Image (cartoon, rainbow, N blue to C red; front, side):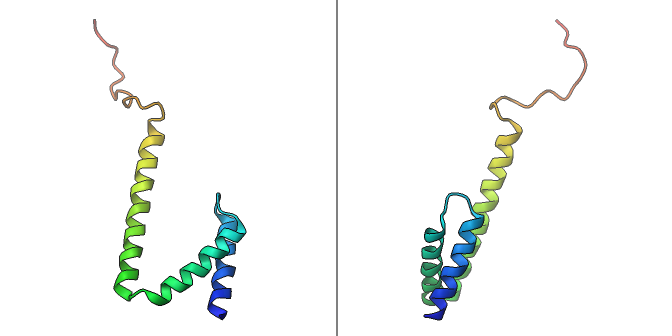
Length: 85
């Protein structure tokens, strides 16, 4: 029981720092997370953690690529010499 209370508290705190999730949803996710952690094996937890890490790295990389070319065009040419006709 105390694990669920702690999980709800931590989930609520994380929800306040994360956009798009309110306090009640964060608390519910905290309770669900503590239940899953108790039932999953160590290799499964490691695989989920590694998958989450890789997904975040991929999302960050795509975000950086999209922000450098906001209009979807090609990057500017590197040469500053005038173009000849």
